[in-house]
Amino acid sequence: MKRFGFCWSSLSGLMLLLWPSPTLAWGCKGHQTVALLAEKHLTPEAKQVVEKLLAENPIDPKLNRYCGRAGRDLMADASTWADDVRGERKNGPWHYIDVPRGSERGPLEPYCGPKGCVTRAISEQLVILKDAKADGAKRAEALRYIIHFVGDLHQPLHTTTNADEGGNCVPVKYFRRMAREHNHSYSPNLHSLWDTAIPDRDAEGADPAEYAEMLDAQFAADIEGWQKDGIHVDRWVWEGFDFAESVVYGALTPKIAVEPNVPVDSCSDDNNIGERLLHQNITAGETYQERAGPVAEKRIAEGGVRLAMILNEALRTAQ
Ligand SMILES: [Zn+2]
Image (cartoon, rainbow, N blue to C red; front, side):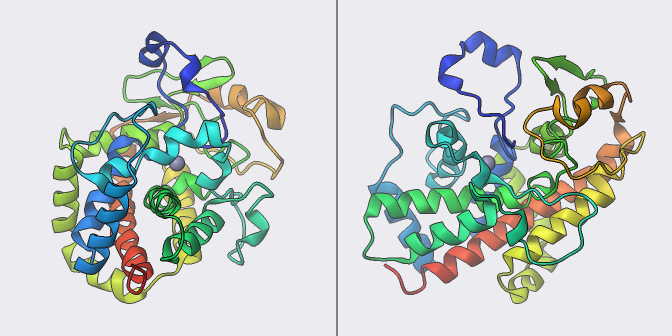
C-alpha cells in the first residue's frame, strides 16, 4: 500500500479485525513467498552471509509484527519487517514509485519524489549491504529492506498510479464482497486486491512455502531466462507498469479512464476520485481473477528469482 500513514500501535485489536490493513504491500503471503522462492536460488555463499546477518542481528522482539513471526525461516520473517517499521521511520515512499498511467517509457528519476522511491531505496540499501565493514545491524536492516522492496517493486500497483494512490482509491466489488467507504478510504480496493486477495485466492490455501514450491516448479522453464537477462531494476518497473495497464486496470468492468496527472494525497483529491469511482460500481469476479492470477504468480516468481540474483551479486565479495 502506498501513502496512508496508519499507526497500528494506536489501534485496538478489534479495529484490526474489523478493517483490513491499508498499509501492506503484497500481503504477508506475497512477501514471504518472494523470500522463500529467493532462498531456493541463492548461492551457498550468499545464503551463508544472509543467514549470518539475520541471525546475528535479530528483529527487535518488541516490534509489533503484523504478519506474526514467519516460523523459523529468517528470510521469510525478514520479508515483512519493512512494513512494520514504515510508520515510525516515516519512509512510506520507499515502498513504491508512482509512474502515472499513460507515461512514455524513459528514465524513472522524474517519478522519484523528494522523499525517495522504491528504486532509489533499493540502490541505497545495496550500498550498505555490500559494505562488509559497515555495522552488522545496519547491514541486516539493509538486507531486510531489499528483501521487501524487490517484492514491492513487482506488485504492479507499486509502480503505477492513476491519480488514485496506486489503486487505493479504486473501490472494487470483489466476487461477493461489496466495496465500502470508511473514513475516505475504500475496501476492498484495487490495491488491496493485488496485495492480498488475488494472490491468496490464487494460492488456494497453500502456505507461503507451498506456494513458493509450486511457483518454482511452474516457472522452471522461464527461470534461466530471467537469470540470463541480468539485473535491470528500471526495466522491471516498466514491466509492472505494462501489466497495470493491460490487466490490473485493463481487465476491470467497467474500464477506468486515464486520470489527469495531478498530485493526490488522499482519495478526496483529484476531484474526489474515490467517491467518483465508487459510483461506477467497478467489479472484479471470476473473469478478472482468471487474468489476474497468472500475472500475480509471474510477478511473485520473478520477484523471488530476481531478489536472489541481487543478493548473489551483492554478497559475492562482501562477507
Ligand atoms: Zn511495502
